[in-house]
Length: 147
Image (cartoon, rainbow, N blue to C red; front, side):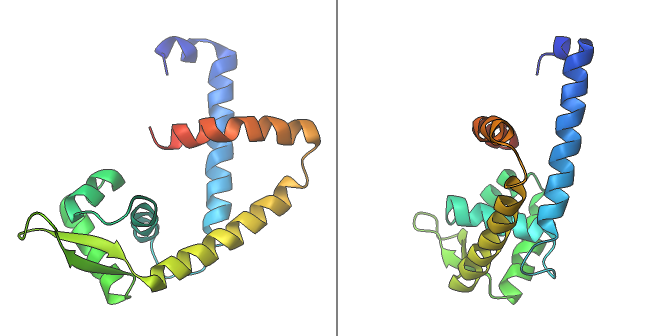
């Protein structure tokens, strides 16, 4: 965002409102998780592997914005829970790929279904104009989350 946007009080207020709304909604969605014993970092790593497919631990650490030693610990915990497995790298025998298991896929799908149902129920409280605005904003929020 250009710094000049923050000079405009209306823009600054909109940014603040967006931040507060996204954080509060995120917190509420997190509490709906199927497995409350997994940390946010573990869930995030599983979600990334589910969306992007198998990758090296280093690639996963970069995508998750954590240091490689932290990712090594996350992977070990997920392996203990049978949610990820290590596979041989097809091109580099020194490397391994981290992949989700069927158990992880089932858990993630159940969690997505539960969270989507909760959010859809919440959206029913919006009027048509609010829902249309949110529907239009959804791709922009998705982009923002992945910048």
